[in-house]
Image (tube, rainbow, N blue to C red; front, side, top):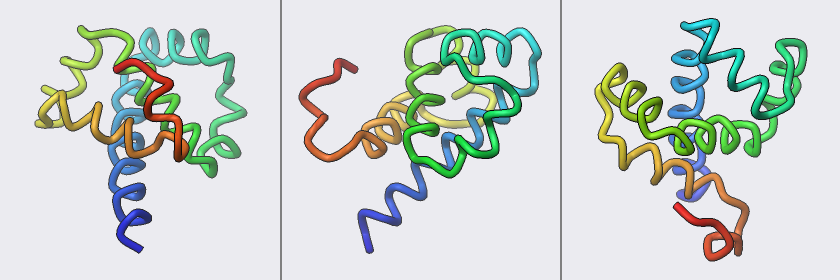
Length: 98
């Protein structure tokens, strides 16, 4: 149950991040371009924890975007990385660079 709670908390940061991206058409367009998703894909994709990982990966890949999101949400930028790591599939922690 505790792992599920941590995953839900991480997904909540992903939801907030998507809202941040959606607040600016240019940011959102870049997200769609980088992920290959379209606005029509969002509802179905949101049911998959991998989607929230993709949102946080996108933020983490651009330091200025990450810092802007963290400032907008009043978060420590490191909390976004911790949330991203919680959403990684089990056993993949050593396969990704932070």
